[in-house]
Every structure is written in C-alpha cells, then in structure tokens.
Length: 601
Image 1 (cartoon, helix red, strand yellow):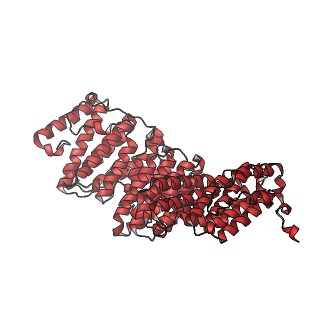
Image 2: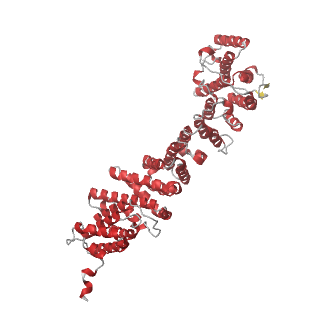
Image 3: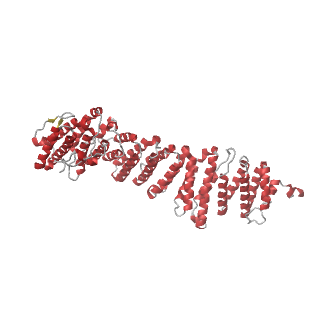
C-alpha cells in the first residue's frame, strides 16, 4: 500500500508540474531548471496537454483555497508558457483548462490576480487555433472584464490601482473580441444585447475619463476594433447600446461633442459602402426621440448632421439620402406647430443646408420636391420655404431649362406671390440662385444711367421650348408677386430682391424672352397707373387678362421704379434703337420731374 503513494508512480506530467512549484508559497516564479523539461515533454507528447492543463488548474484551485498567492502566479506562468509553446493544431487541447485557470483567478477577490489573469488572456487571444471551438463560451469573461473596466475608485486602493484594473479590464474585452473575431462560429451570440450592453458602455465610460490618457486611448482603440469586428452585419448591434448610453447619461445635452466624436470614430473604421448603416441608426434614433425635449433632439440632430456630412462627402450615403431629408423635414413640420421649438427649427434648417452642401447636384431637385410636398397647408410655411432656400443655395445647375422638372418649377414660382414678407423674400432668393448661371447678381447696377458694356453683365440663353412651357406660369406668378410685393420701408430687401429677379430673368432669357418680359412690364405699368387713372378694367398681357387692382401710392411708386429700371436693362440688351431712345427719354424726364419713380430712389 505504501508503494502506491510513491512519487515515482505519479504520471510524468504530474511530476513535472509539481516539480515547478517552489517550496515558498509566496514565491511567484516557477523552478526554472525544471520548466524546460515540461516544455520539452509538451512538445514531444502533445496528447498529454489536456491532462497537464487539468492538473495545473487543480493546483491553482488548491493554492487559491489555501491563499498561496505565489503558487497561483506560478500556475498561471506555467500555463502561459505552455500556451506559447503549443502549435496551433494542438492549442485546443490546452485551451479549456487554461480558460478555467483564467476563470478561477478572475473570481478571486485579489486585485493582482484579476489583473494578471486579464493580461494573460490578452496574450492567449493573440494565438491562432486550428478549427473552431463551438462549445466555448466567453460570457463570464465579458462580464468580469466589463466589471473591471467599470470599477469605482472607491472600491480600490489608490488611483494607480484603479487605472491598472480598468486598463486590464479594457484589454481583456479587446482580447475577447479579438478571439471571437478569429473564431467565426462564436459570433452568433456575442452580438446579443446582453453582451453589447456591457462591452460598449465599458468603452464609452472610459473614453470620458479625460484625466487619464491611458484609459481614453485604450477604450477608444477598443471601440474601433469592436466596430471593425462588427462590420455591416452587426454595426447596428454596437450602435444601439451606444445611443442608449448617450440617452441614459444625457450626453446629447451635457457632452454633445463627445457623442459626435464617438460616432465619428466608428465611421472611420467602416468601409465607405457600409457607412450608410450608421446614418440609418441615427435617423431611427432621432425619430424615436420625437417626444423628447428640444435640447435632446438638437443633440441627436447635430450628431446626425456631422455623420451625414462625413459620409456624403465621400459619396457613401447610399440608399439613405432621401430617408435623412424625409426625417429632417418631418421633424421640421412637427416643430412648426410648437412655438417653443424655434431653436430646433433653426438647427433642422441648418442641418438640411449642411448636408445638401456636400451632396451632388443631381440630388437637389429630389430634395426640394420632398420639402415642397411635405406640408398639408394650402401655402408652404415659412420654415419650409427657408429650408428650400438653404438647399437652393447649394444647387448649381448648368442650365436653367434642365435645372428643375416642370411640376417643381411651377410649385416654386407660385411661392413668390406670398403675403408673408419672409416667404416672399426667401422665394425670390431661391429664384436668384436657380436663375443666375453667370454670376450676374452682384453686378446689376441700382441706377438707370449705366451702359451694359461697363457692367460686366453676361447674357444667357434658354430654349424656346422651355419658354413655351413656363411663360404662362412664370408671368402669372410674377404679376401676382408685384401686386402683393412688400414695399414697407423697414423691408427694402424685398423690393431689391424683386428688382434683381426681374433683371436676372432679362439677362438669362436674353433675346428669346424679351417679348414676354416687355408684356409683363406693361402689365406692371397698368398696376402702377390703374388707380391713378381710375380706369379699372382689365390689363392684357402675356399670361392673359388680369384685373387691375387699386394699390397704395407708395406701392405704385415702387412699381414705376421697377419698370423703369428693368426697361433700361432691356433697352441695353435689345437691338432696337427706337426702344432705347424712348426709354432714355422717359427716364430723363422722370429724373427732372419725378425722381422717386426711378430705381436709384
């Protein structure tokens, strides 16, 4: 019986392992002279690796129970050496017992053991294995590493230990994702919300630790690695917990820039063609926060805008372009009914303009059509017209006759005769941008004494087919526009915008359009003199008969000045010497007797 307990009867792997533990239980270094023997045995007899690992785990468990921390470290170092020496095709024999050792150490209440286990697992995660261990689960490791990454400074001894534990936890999480990235068969469950709700907040909380650059760098790199591992199929699983974290911690309001930077870091890691997925997540989140306070919606909106600008500038918006604008316009339409959301309206309008600025021109008509058709009101509300204007400001069509589809052209021209001075001005500015193909607007003189050759104005050209399609709609709206034009002295911009619009039409339509424009100016003249002559009746023009209404004196003076200024330009553009002499004579007489009826007034 005594012979059975003789050490020589123990299996060789047991003898080799036991011989590595020093007599002093506090000594954390294995007996170096015998370590090479164990490694040689592992290489030459790999079939014993599983039992060698099991015995190491047994010794470690026993040492933990007896509080022999040195021997615990010895067992870990031996297992690390074995893992390092194993060939990829043999590593699976040792992996399960190695992970048991890591598991046991992470369960310990000793900080040094937890940190050592995490650092050891990071080394293990960098090793390749042959085959996929479908039975392996990393749930416990994710839970423990996330807990370490979120440890409170009040629960540890000093700031240095606090940083050490958190870094070890973050590195452990990165190791888990690295390992899972290699073991493709395990990815089906790691993207569950139960795991992502631990991993993502762990990274984000540490990214907010601005006083410790080591934590910020480690967590930022971890988040980017997570996004790379997720790719297109699972990036939504990462974005969900991230957006939830921003919501719960009120970061949309308190640290809006942090939220934007975190999302931007994900964009940088993704392939261009996949980035639209992040845009879709933010659009959905903005819709989900429709009942939230304006400050929260503004924070989400700013993040969405930054994301869209980054993605769109590289031509990677994909199928989400109109979805983004539909979302923004819907929120703008809802906010119109709430006077307390005026700042949100400004942010939404700015977002529409910022995103439009980086999109190709062929998207602009679709965006403008979406905005134009979004309101149920009989006339488009001022915020939506402002929205149209910021899109038009980014639109540079090569030719007017191909700039807009006819239904949209008609809808936009019908915005001009609005009784709201703000809408009226914005509508005129929209048309300035759409019409002025040659940069003429800043060169238009505000007097009736110039010669065309001195101004640098350039004549455009449109097709007669375009003029035939649009003239009736255009001049009918222009007549109504000048009839309701805001001429108040505190709004001179409206009169100036009207004058510039008429001049731009003359310049861009050039010779083919002069006849219709002259007819329109005659109708404007009838508007101006109709009441003075008490003629009533109808005025006949290019768009058909229109009743002349009575206008205030100041309004009629403005119309006279507009007609004089535009006729002077037409006389310069036209080849008719008779017209030029007549216009010059009338303007000269007015300058003598009625200077208030000239544009320079």
